[in-house]
Length: 428
Image (cartoon, rainbow, N blue to C red; front, side, top):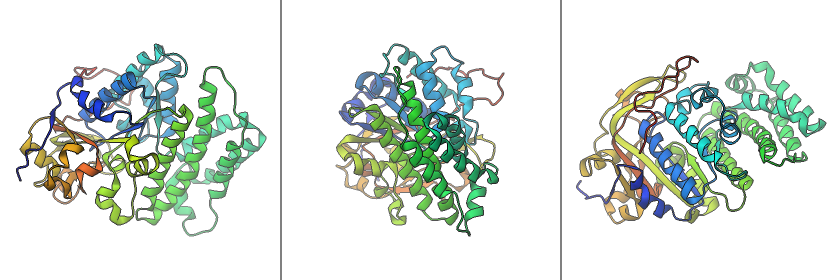
């Protein structure tokens, strides 16, 4: 169908001017991606994030990553301007899928955050945090390092929780399988630990570092509580584990906003399936919610701005199964009658689109198939999967369309292989 879709050119960072204007005074900007392995999604999100931090005073970036690993990056960009190279720092992301945050695109962003923060006074340095719930064992280990600073009761509660999980070899899935059909699990232990840490006396510090470490210890306890719930729900199947995860990410986002004060502003990097309002997809039929929906409901739609991303064809980094080695894969032309195919036919070049303009076209208010590629991807299944029926102008507030994309640049796993790819660092 020919619609003459309204759009704006997208060639360089200056072309984001109308998007900055549309974002206005929003407190939270959610930036999506249609895959976890596409170069342009990361670089355009970085270009927009830099401008939001510099021009609109946004306080932090929160990503679809584990809390402990991201907090190491946060401390580095705030406290260690002359620390190890960013490419080596990001080797902290050593659990599959390593390429999501261990990549040269993020290394460039981390370098920029360090340089930006070096010019900022204490309390105004931009942070980098993880919203996800997967790091059960890593969070418990972090708690064990710091719980003793919060009093004997907190230390003892942390020790009991740690010992409860020890028989499962640091494997949350093994734990979930072991407790699936018995009444004994570790839920009480992690809840007791969280309450004990919440009752602690905050540590005082002059530079904000102690306050952040206090917060991180309590956040790791919250991760342990919700991860324990998540892995048990995942074993039961259905959409309950998804909801545990996205409620946790929204709770973490709200806690970070509270930590940074009543005027704080947040940038969120997650997949479209998390940031695009679930009520305007087929997720709603399964009772599933996501961060985009929860943010609009809890913070007010006027305070939240959601940007979706998508492309017609190109290449991507992904694995053929969970835990499989990553590889560069071809992303074929989008399925006929999909949102991406429509944009390719009608526009055929990189473009920025606004929902306020798209709503004027009735044909765009129907559910259209919208591509979604995860960390696991099989291009040959494009005809049958990898698409989410979506009312695009309601799911997002704006959309960045890349007609043809390139694969992300994962960091090497060996310490002596840190040679940047061609054209690094990328400039828009």
